Length: 363
Ligand code: 5AD
Image (cartoon, rainbow, N blue to C red; front, top):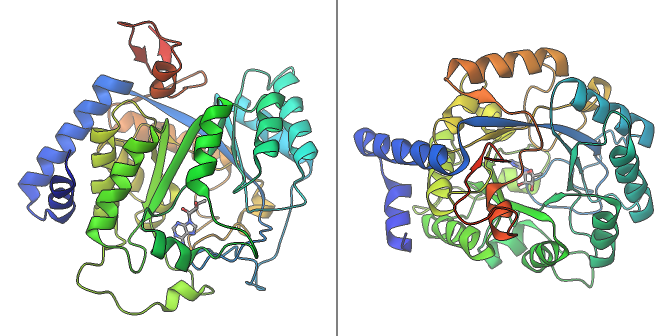
């Protein structure tokens, strides 16, 4: 799809036309990745962060955050919970926390991968901008996937909202290439409606997904956090993209059309804006993954990236029941197994020509 076509869809306001977009995205989702929804257990292992991103509540400069770091034993216990709930993947996410040293993280990965209960879990890491040596060590230890959003393809906007560490460049696109070369199943994504983001920027973000040949693409609406500089950003200009659920769903649908065999989550940020039907909205417009939160309840409210009700959905067991019922109610099933990205399986040649992945499993 050309940039001007993407921009036209992003600006589309006609309900009947949008129905066509939703139908096409849902059909592409069905043909390329199947009807199953993959559940990933998300464990927010630390909210310490050395960075001071203008949009994120966990920014180093925010002294109001109560900081925590889970112990390896606590992380292992959460991985066991993931298995107990029938999930095939555990996602370890944190701020850029230097105390999560490369050897420490490698040891946690090894313990998960060698555990009697947890050994079959796919391990996804989302630990920020780390060095090639660290990423290589974790791959050797058994990590399968890595998530690092490039947030926006507009370099000026990115610099404004994402100050580099002193004396270093921000090089998320370079890191994404490194991850791919190391053999990771690679995920990235953006926020929709960042102050200063235009429709053309969003269209270029979609083109960048294609260019980077990503396996997983996560995106959600930007949600202002009162204790961050971006919450006081100047009022929107005329080309400003809205940070609402409709805009985010348009980007989910277009992402499915331009990168049809990727795994795309219905993200928590979407659900934060619309707790009643945020997940369903994305799942019926191109998404095929949900990431239930398994962070121990005593830490969860401190992982305050953006404001949302972090206690309202109950603990992991309650949420698991609810989300499975909600998925069944839209006529979909939940997958078992790792749920690798069909795009990854295709590009790494795990699938022979003519074979079609169904729910991430070779048919
Ligand atoms: N609103 C929405 N998403 C946010 N993220 C961080 N802060 C916010 C916010 N205020 C997203 C970023 C990051 C991911 C972990 O969370 O895209 O990559």
